Image (cartoon, rainbow, N blue to C red; front, side, top):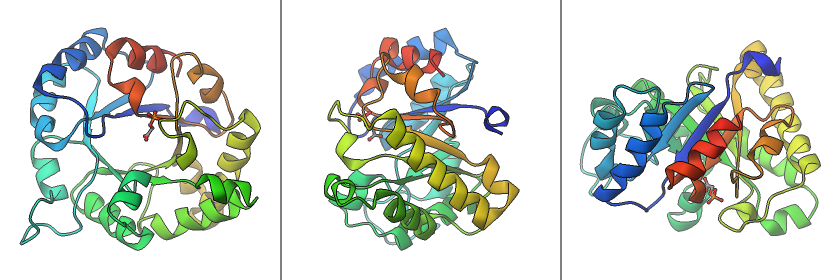
Amino acid sequence: MTSSRRKLVAGNWKMNGLTASMAELVEMCDANPSNCDVLVCPPFPLIGRFVGSAGNSHIEIGAQDCHTAESGAHTGDVSAALLKDVGASAVIVGHSERRADHGESSALIKAKAEAAHANGLTAIVCIGETEAQRDAGNAETLVTAQMRESLPSGATAANTVVAYEPVWAIGTGRTPTTEQIAAMHSALRAALVADLGDEGNGIRLLYGGSVKPNNAAEIFAIDDVDGGLIGGASLKAADFLGIVNAA
Ligand code: PGA
């Protein structure tokens, strides 16, 4: 079944980049990789420009968060409707940094993913355990439950991607073992199929957390790993393209 899912490599720029960073995107677009789906998610103010710049390439542009509401009195927030309007095709929801920095709950993340869907955006729903939870020995049970709480109703292979990102692997240079990633992705796949039937077989499961050009091929070869969500290594075209080429 793995072969029926096209791999996706998504870059999450987080709160990094200035207008000058457009040069990195231009380099990525010039390379125009087509071996897998490629998405770059810059900070909000750069989305419109990035969409314009990526226009003639296969690279799509996404956002890192959205609000649950269509519009209204929510100072500083951005609606999924506006993201769609400026040309984004996807939005990351529930990244562990938002869960931690902004106290976002799985229920809120589910609502954000539903807002994304209502506006025709793909929702990339992030989940993952802390180091203490991993050490306690119940990471799979916990992360599977987190996924079930965070997944939007009406999730399909076309509108939803799940990103498993162990919190302790993000930005640390540490990654789980191949066996740990395989066990988690297999547990998540089983839950998706149990809940959604064949549609659950089509939903892509990304791995994220310290993916680099030198470990990407090994990680992407694991069963049920359908690509990656890349932070630090997505900021430089050479690194990101190295990862994309490994998919
Ligand atoms: P990292 O971040 O690749 O820098 O570890 C991944 C992420 O947070 O999406």
